[in-house]
Image (cartoon, rainbow over all chains, first blue to last red; front, side, top):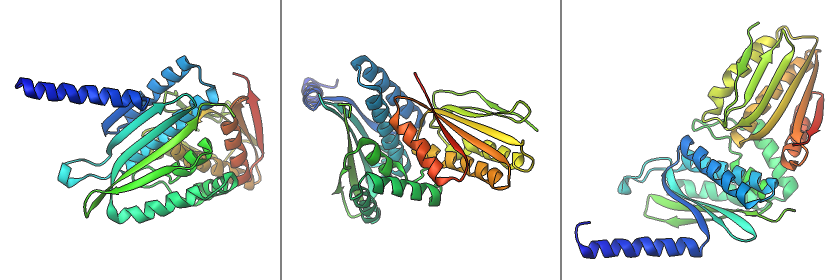
Length: 192
Length: 126
């Protein structure tokens, strides 16, 4: 550390960060590039943790599934931000655990020009009931193709139907080029 | 014809395609880094097989987990089997799922509604 003042500020930041994570029951937080290795590491960590917590296997599988789809969304759709020298495929990823539910939250940069398209996809997913989601999934599986980035366009639909919950999302405008997209998926820990 | 035998890992399934010994199976976990690359040789093998298939093909799916990108490629595999069936050959898909895994059971039902090929749901206890 260069000097005491900087050190104290850094200490305050770390402690503040620690307290906030504790208060929000966050047991995993990451910012950076989402690679296949990272996806494997995080899901394996969560599996070990959930097995120890003795969550029902159906809950464990759903959390695993949602984590995989959310991580792949970032790695495939997050766009770089030239101003902050951020690269494609980066974002923030968090998992929180409360008494009755798990929350998986992702945040990543997308271009403003793509916001409306993404919003309408999410709105469409959120207005479907279980049958509607199943129909949409089947239709997309039959008619869709795997994109250059390796996505099948099925992630949001499947998160919604596997969790049985609406997707929570918002867009924060960063500047006239980029927005920050936040998505939270909730998985109930109580077996249906 | 050649045999495909791929040993599964924590993110790729075990695959056996062996015409001579009448074994056709995909099992384990499927979330490969690149689904298209992983499934390409499998689909190509089925294209060749479909030219001269066995009188009866029984294809076993016994998956623990697959991601959505894999679900699309699994459909492509099933569509090859549908082609064989519609050419007048006997095909049976056996979809094995853990008896406590409703999502995997429903995934099998869903595929059986999409492809026109005889489909059998086979629960197993874990």
